[in-house]
Length: 432
Ligand code: S3P
Image (cartoon, rainbow, N blue to C red; front, side, top):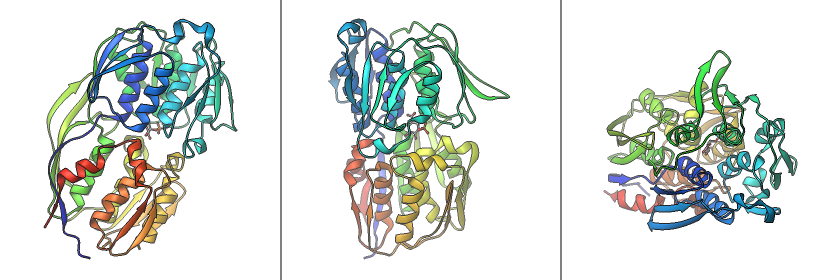
């Protein structure tokens, strides 16, 4: 079966998932009415929305991704009737970890539950610092289900051993309710959407760097209600960017992609790999930079290495960048990415296994992998997604360059982050 598919055209990428979670949580904390334009309606964000709705947030859709949120009468202002509410976080680590920071200092007692994949993921990274702040948490061996009984917290200075935006944001959302300054240090700067949105809403927050690392200082603040417009998700765009780079004859323009520098590690990789791309039409929406990105098929993709400071800036793109690596002329290596083992699946193991099944020369490392390109995919196989949406989309793009039939089990999980994925593929896909 010879592969004759290519991608051409222009698409607008759906809203950023990370920023959407934050906009919902902060809208909930505003005690007011605001409009959110371009909210992601992926399953993960719906998990956050449904939880907040259960706590009294009212919302009304004005159009598909635009809604009015009203938090002026939520349960938090009437705590007497709040007794252990079970809240389902679905597949979403961001929902779980960010909301935990707020719950720890709230009037609520909640039990957070999640699906099979989320229930395996580590929560110690937030339980430990929150307990240092005085939080009352019980968990299933540092995993979900996790019960949090809100209490008065004390401020701390915390040095996070990992660069995790979820840990940082959890502690920022806890610190936002405490009079004195809470400081969170991280070794490498992770995505800073919480900080940017809080600044946009007028919070008392300072972000900088000293010799101990990157820090955020936050204290109790009055937020100013303001409408929020959300940029497109570079982590979703990444699948189309890579696809266009590796599928002969392709050329696509992706509009409205968030290019916050804490998220654009993929562009640094594209620079090293000498992928033919360009940015245009840059602007800022609600404190976040965005641009249109055009990517053209690139015949000679140069090998690249991903490690160190780059890792948090492209952590969710590693599965699709692994596919890009298979098309490079030489050896590519990913290092310092051990946290990939704690994502929706153990992404180091699942990528190594599936790529090996397809005949790729890939070597597993504790903190990454080494891939030898250039691979001519020409094998029939069945691949498992393990409820991991980013693996599912990577396999699908791989199927477009594989000359034999690829069966992918569990593609439904793509709805976790990117329900529009197949529609956009349909819009761009042509046959020679
Ligand atoms: C996210 C942060 C990242 C990322 C996840 C979303 C966020 O996780 O992998 O998909 O919205 O804060 P870590 O911060 O745990 O690395």
